Structures are given as structure tokens and as C-alpha cells.
Length: 177
Image (cartoon, rainbow, N blue to C red; front, top):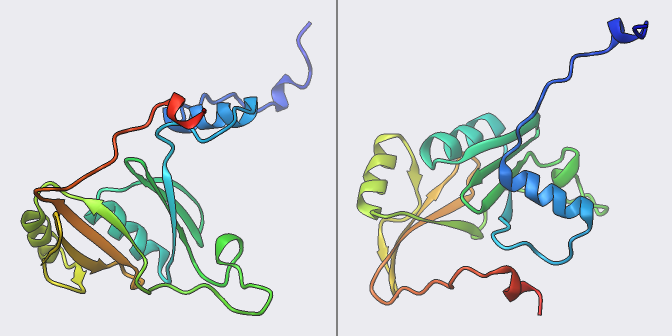
């Protein structure tokens, strides 16, 4: 005999989350201790125009939009970097502190994104209307340039040079002695 409530039930819609998200969720549910290898680094930027900033990171810098649950928050990914964008003075990460101060965009803190050819990346971004804070600067083992996102937050693009060093990827045994 069929259940009389079947007519009121919503259909089950299968969801296929990103494999990294599913693995992290499973670790959290099962109580696996310690950081997971390859776990993304997370940076939060405060922005004044969420639409313009999401478009900047998605269209100009190749980020994928993971979540956009409200008009005051977005989560984007590029490789192992998770970028959280929050509108200041609103709920969640942009909420005012007890003393009344509100997070604000800008400053000198920044994310650094590696590019294979800095000259080509800068030329392409200039054509597409990106605002730069500096020209190309040659430093120790890298060349870099700073540009602004629509809220004034800095993004550093860098190209490795001779002598550049990067840490080898860690394994699960590196995390758990």
C-alpha cells in the first residue's frame, strides 16, 4: 500500500560536490584529526561591491565561484586557495566588532598568485581594464606586480626566477608525527 504522504514529498535531487569539498566534509564528520594534505589556504577580503569583485576574480584571474549564498558573501577557489569575499558591516565575517569598528577593504596585505609569464599576464589584464598599483618589480628570485581588485584590495602576481624556492608538497605522514 503506497504512503499517502508520497504526493507531498519533494523529489530527491542528486548533488555532486567538488571531490575536495566532499573529502573535507567526510574528514570533519568522521573526526579525522589534523590538517589534511592539500587543504586549501583561506583568505578573506572585505569588498564594497560584491558583484564587481566576484567578476574581477572570476573573469580576470581565473577563480571559480563555489558559493554565492547571499548578496554579502561569496566563496571562490583557484587551485588550493579559497577566497572568501565579505561586505563589511553585514552578518558573518563582515560584522561590526563589539567596539563598533567595521572591517574595511584595502591595506597592504595581499594574496600572491603565481603566473607562468608575467609580461603576458600584465598586458592581458591592462587590456581588460585592471588597475595596477605598481609596474613590474624585479626582486630576489621573482618578478612581481601589484594590482587592485574593485574594492582596493591588493593582488600580487609573480613569476618565479632563478633561485626561486618552493616547499615540496607534504604528505599525510608529514602532518601526523
